[in-house]
Amino acid sequence: MTDLHRLSIRELSEGLAGSKFSSRELTEHYLKRIEKIDAQVQSYVTVTPEQALAQADAADALRKSGMANVLTGVPIAHKDIFCTHGIKTTAGSKMLDNFISPYDATVVAKGKVAGLVTLGKVNMDEFAMGSTSESSYFGATKNPWALDHVPGGSSGGSAAAVAADLAPFATGTDTGGSIRQPASFCGLTGLKPTYGRVSRFGMIAYASSLDQGGPMARSAEDCAYLMNVMAGHDERDSTSVNIDADDYVANLNGTSVKGLRIGIPKQYFNVAGLDADVKARVEESLKKLEDMGATLVEIDLNMTDAYVPTYYLIAPAEASSNLQRFDGVRYGYRCENPVDLTDLYKRSRSEGFGPEVQRRILIGTYALSAGYYDAYYVKAQKVRRLIQQDFLKAFESVDVIAAPSAPTTAYKIGASLDPVEMYLGDIYTIAVNLAGLPAINAPVGFDKDQLPIGLQLIGNYWSESQLLSVVHQYQQATDWHTKRAAIAEETV
Image (cartoon, rainbow, N blue to C red):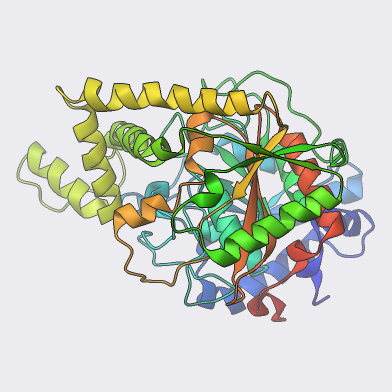
């Protein structure tokens, strides 16, 4: 079959269960697509055909024995920030180019229990620091909709792999928008869960109080299948919350759009730099939801101006702390012929880390240094609480909050954006991480250059089922999520 890559996760599951095709046939199909197409997209860092086919054969055996799960035999791509036993795990960095993980991250382990077949590891901004996937040591990933544009970041490899139909779904991580923004840029659905919903064990840390894993796929339904695998308490992760996860697939029609109160922050739609096409498509999607029975309610989010400076103090500070472990001593890159311990530290880190990672380490180290800790880091944490309270006040009068996922569509590769300009592009996503809230991106149209545009819906704590349900119903009434880039239409 030449069109297996066009099937939804539900259709893949039903096809495997009905013996219309085997997991080996499905896995071989995706491996052939990767071999033929990925040289143009550069979404994968490591492809694991031997392991994938062995897992596929095991899945087929489980199917024959009647012991299969719903997703047994379905392929997946993992962001290269999740540790995978026996496979190189790089976090997009020269620092970890030689690191073979001795264990599986909880997310990966859960995928194996569910019977998922790992196709390989996909590219990302180095240590998840970036919005374009250009900071990867392994080169820039391309946007399947326009190969001279970025796919977003840091989960750009995950987004590009799914958008090019090189994987049916993928794991991503979101520290300040790194699932939602690349999903927006690549025309996908991507969910950032509530902080603590998905285990961070084995997920290489960028900013520990902000990082959260989540699913990336074409539709809310596809994301729900992967959330059923990823979500749940993990005693090995001290930030994992012991609250029972929902059955996200069963709950896809659990929230009625009719009567749903959607908050429209007036500050969000008056941001300097908001592209006219983005604003128009997002407003059209909100009108569609209103036609479906939702009520649009104008709200105030008064802390908007504080989002970027607060995030870019807290996240680099935590990065500075987390990345001090990469010192050239225990594992990872080590400089050649160090003259002493100080030289080993300095050259291993300066040669192993790229410019963006070094920039954030320096910012974070400064913010945590004696004399500046109280003035910057402590104050940022206090403002963080005010941002959270701003959202909670809004949720007293609305069920979800709507916003663009990004102020623009995908940038051109190599666009001369200075770091501050790039950071300002995170204006709509970073507050969600600061507050620990869940949020989802849904594709809602295209700009004049036929680049995808995304709507972001933000929910209250533990409302992933609600967000998936609302987007699922929107997608039942629209077809934006079914649109495919030309490169995804190529056959093998």
